[in-house]
Figure (cartoon, rainbow, N blue to C red):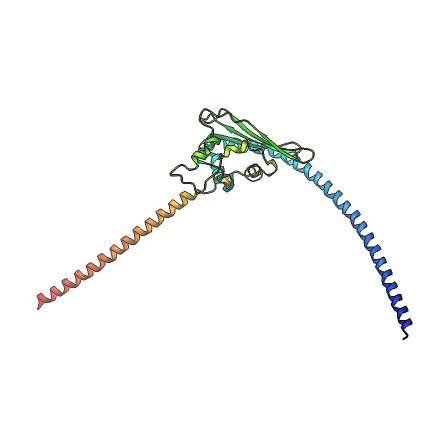
Amino acid sequence: MSASAAKVSKKELNSNHDGADETSEKEQQEAIEHIDEVQNEIDRLNEQASEEILKVEQKYNKLRQPFFQKRSELIAKIPNFWVTTFVNHPQVSALLGEEDEEALHYLNRVEVTEFEDIKSGYRIDFYFDENPYFENKVLSKEFHLNESGDPSSKSTEIKWKSGKDLTKRSSQTQNKAGRKRQHEEPESFFTWFTDHADAGADELGEVIKDDIWPNPLQYYLVPDMDDEEGEGEDDEEDEEGLEDIDEEGDEDGEDDEEDDGEDGEDDEGEDD
């Protein structure tokens, strides 16, 4: 093949390759445009599904209300139900100081209310009996999402009785000698009512709404680990006591055998 022929062939090959690339890029661009169209349809269906799901949630929220009310009436018959539930919950318990627990013994009812459109927020109400810590009968905290999706929160101002503000005493009580708690909490549980710094990441609010409120009984019925440990220690003591008795019994048995042996020897000596 001549040099000129070789050059022509190479040009033809390059020309064909460039044409293939142009065709391929065009097909890819068309495919991308079609994918975008399909994705828009998927997004439209997702939005429609969200609207339908929201309607279903709103419907069943209303259906659940009578049962929540009945449950609250039954819970009211059980002393210290809510403080026990909070103490037994691992995340909430980590926020409770000793005086927080004492104050929560006066908590007689908790209610979580999602706003009618659900997606705009919810409110948590804590109902208290007369107590030595604050004047309020109800402490509430609300969480809101505005139209642009920005979160915010607001809460009841706690009217502390003289010298009873737990949010100011927490730094003094956390180092109290003789505490039996295994962790040290940096602040009082009640500081949650005044903390609005990051409403979109309020873990305590989410835990109460999504974990405790749907079924508080599961946490109320969590066995007390201290009681279980105490029972275990008693069992060990009983077992040790039985072992001691067995050992004493064995020693007594050996002594009896030795005595019998000596008596037998004496009898033989007398016979002789």
